[in-house]
Image (cartoon, rainbow, N blue to C red):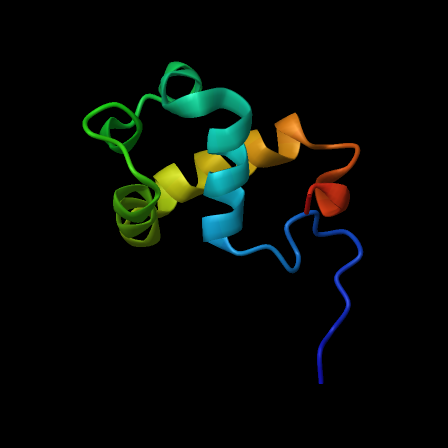
Length: 80
């Protein structure tokens, strides 16, 4: 039973996909410029960023908000 969440722009997206797409769009420097968290500045990688974001809700919230702001019109169509 999967529930539809038409009002949730992040529905169906994993944190890894969100971070990867933001990194592809902004790069590490651009991410750090927009969200001042060390996982984007000090020896950044997808793996280390995911580890930090999974443990730190306030940082994850900021990353998810940036994703929504960046891809607001086509958040569900960014799969490519």
